[in-house]
Image (cartoon, rainbow over all chains, first blue to last red; front, side, top):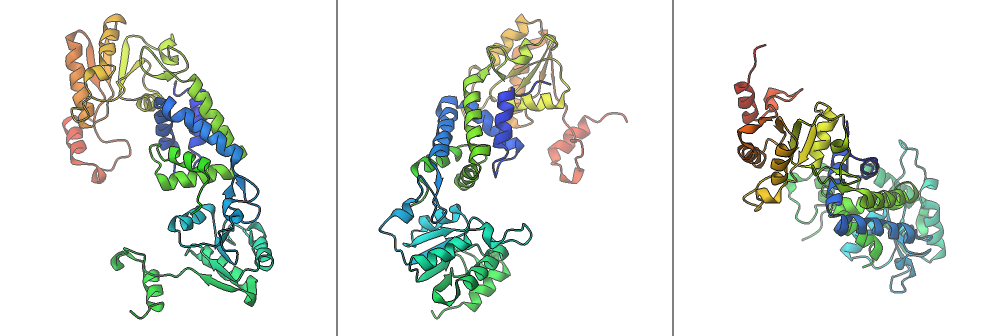
Length: 198
Length: 198
C-alpha cells in the first residue's frame, strides 16, 4: 500500500485534530491546500507562524491580543465600570460583533464542571473577584452560555461577588427571527415568565 | 468593536476557505490552535511548509509524491500491465487503503462536465491514451465515482481507448454492511441486474 507521503500523512493527522475536521475532511482539506500551494498553502503556513509568534493572552482579562494587555483593556474609550464575563474568547468576539457592549471583558476560560473536575481555581474566577474590587466596578454582566454548566457558573460567580456590586445576566427569550414551533419548551417558558408589557 | 487581531483575522479567513470549514468553525479551529500553540499551531505551520516544499505531481500519473515520478510509478513491484483510472488523488488513496490493486494508477484530475466546461483536454485523458499505447497496458480499470459525470467520463474513456485494450469498471451493487431499506432504488436495480449464483 502506497498512500500519501509521510509529510502529507503528518499534515493530515494534525489537521484531523482541529475541531470540526475528522480524518476524511482533513484529507480533503490537505489535497485542496496542495492544489492551491501558492495561493493558500504557503500563505496559511506563514499566517500560522505569525499568529504563533504574536498572539498573547491578556494578563488582565484573558482575551487574546498581541501583548500583555489586549486592545480592549488598553483602550481609554471602553468604560471601566462594567465587566462582561464570558466563557471563551469566541464569545467575546461574538459580543463585539453585536457591538452592544462598551465596557471591558473577563474571559473565564471555561465553565465549572463537576464531571470534568473544573473548579473555580481552574478558571479566571479569583482574578475576576480581584478586578471587581480593584477597578471600581459597578456592574458585572454574566454573558455565559444558557447551558447547565454555564448557568451553574453564573450562580457561583454571583454568590462569590456578593452584594457589593450589581450582577446581571443576559435576558433569556425568543431569539430574533425565531419561530415558536421550532423552539424548545425551556426557551418558551423562560420567555413567558419574562414577558413584558407591549 | 474590537474583535480578533489582524493576524488572527487573516488566519481565520484562510482557514474558512478550506473545504469543510466555514467562518464559524474556522474561528473555533483558530482559537483551538492558539490554545495549543506549542503542541499544534507551530508544528502545523512547519508541516504545511514541508508539504509545500516537497509535494510534487507525478508527471506520469498525476499522483502526489515528492519527485517527478511518484512512489507507485517508480516501484518495480507494481504490475505495469494494469492501469486503474481515478478522478482524484483522494480516490487513489482510498484504493490503496483497500489494498486490492497491485498495478499503477492514472489520476484524471476531475470528470468531464458540460456544465463546468471541462473537456477531455482539461483532464489527463490524452496522457492516459499515450500511456496505454506506450506501456503495453492490457487492462484499464475505470474506478470513477458512480455519479452521472463520473459515468459519462467512463463511457468517453472506454470509447476513446477503443478495442485494443480490455476496459473494465468497478462492480456496482449493495455495499458491504448495507441495508436494503436505506439504499436508493438505483443501487438496488443495479445489484439486481448484476446478481450472481449463490
